[in-house]
Image 1 (tube, rainbow, N blue to C red):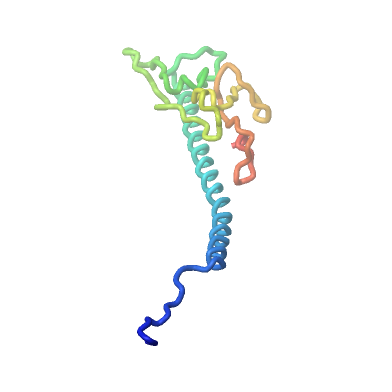
Image 2 (image 1 turned 180 degrees about the vertical axis):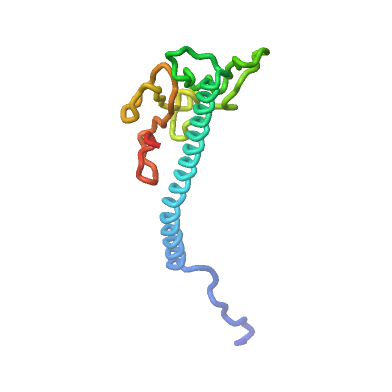
Length: 164
């Protein structure tokens, strides 16, 4: 100690240069992380789409099987597929049951996760293909043979969501 003064202390804190370098590193990390989070979000929505298509198509197939087995009344000129998607959840009377038990094929109709239409009903978020419609030009008709997404987007696998 010189003349009773405490020894000089080194300056504390960060310099402006150190702060700028740190902020630059954080900005670079953020720009790398953003696309990765968008891909993860898209991948999650695509998985929801796969699951929803699987559920609806399984319900359509179960309805057709029940019609073929005589549990659902149908005319000779009908395909045996439901007239609309609502028939899968609203239920159909079992033609073989004398008590008129109802047959349900889905608990609820899933929504298309790529439909940005909050005011539309779940049924209206899907495009429909009838049994008499060709696969390369799907059209609605008297029944619902298949469903597909209305989205114009393309999946991470390079296939349009409409083709899933």
